[in-house]
Image (cartoon, rainbow, N blue to C red):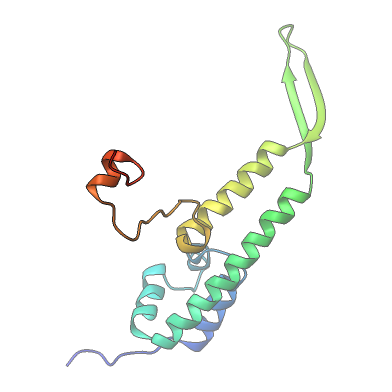
Length: 146
């Protein structure tokens, strides 16, 4: 009658949950030698309600850490070299804030958060209408029939 259902190995469960709660990705954890592939972790989530809830909580904690990291990146200049090659073949080097790199870091994290939790982090506007609109209101604009 098939193989007996195996539960989530507690050592692996603890490891992956701590990893996710630290704001890191599941695929990155799965690339570590000795860890199962990500489809196995999703199978665990499907088969074990308690693990699924713990995983969701770990993801939520990780999201908070990533959001805080965005603020830290925004508030902390990163100095780097900007090398410009001139027409005569010489180069000019300046030390400056790597603002474009910081913007990319923040944007990437925000997009990831929006993918993981669109209700909380997506910037899409949700516009819904409740009530009713009559033909008279549509034609006249204010509901009056002059």
